[in-house]
Length: 383
Image 1 (cartoon, one colour):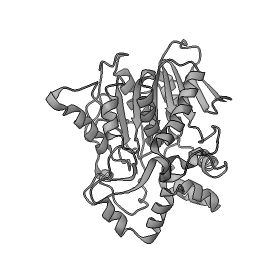
Image 2: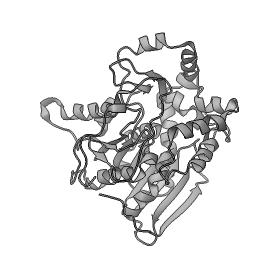
Image 3: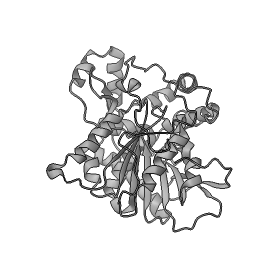
Image 4: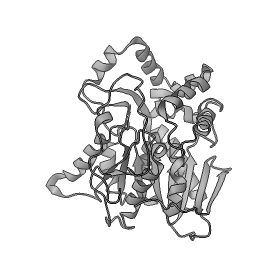
């Protein structure tokens, strides 16, 4: 399955809803669909890069939105205690309620909900609270799936003093984004990141535009809810030797929550980059736990776990067409009642023929991750 390469007349509209404060980008093929067709809602960020490829083949409307306090959405002050002093339930509800208000404002009955990274975590929290509104849940490299592994306390105890300071600051509500802004080093740090992170071989990666977008999010806007989201919901992680560890862990991990969600939402799909710092095998463990339900009875449609060729954590930038193929395969593989119609093998890869080539930069921690050499071995049909 590949995205159509023809030049299509795609209508794009951007707007901010006055009473929700949510900024959206709405894409669809001009004159092609009716109001009753399904809606695909993307949690905005790097996912935006694939919204046009998705719009060429998705039979309805595609919305990319910035979460409240992020991007071009409104930036209200954070109303709760910062960092780990804030109850997780309050932090989740703050962002989930904003998404629900946006959905209601557009009179969208049900949606296919897609979120990336921390947006994937919020998307799962939304589906928990409003399962009747979610036709299907697609999580791209969702943050916060596993529980902290054994040995993490020892890793933290042996960490350099500067990393211990960072961990303490995060617990108190600070983040790299806020420090970047306050120290006036945003452009230099982000330019260095962009040069190390993305190569110049792929013409679809508009590095100057992406740099300005990141600067606008992190360094040119007032401090607000978006700046405190990660540290309210996540804790600094670490990767004990021999573990499937990650750099952050959720204060309320998703592992068991996803197993409960498959009973409420018709289908759940997990998509990771081939060299993602979020380890795809943690998502695979959740899917296997679903298959190993007592008595051999699988509740709900089996959880998809797929990978995007030559993709890192921002695989929708590294390989947007491969990512779009994976999303479309997940969506087209299920009927409205959740019955699996078409699927790809467990752990299958997408998008190896699109010319993507990930630039694996040196990890900030200097730690070589197991997934850096955990290559895709099986491929989805036609990929």
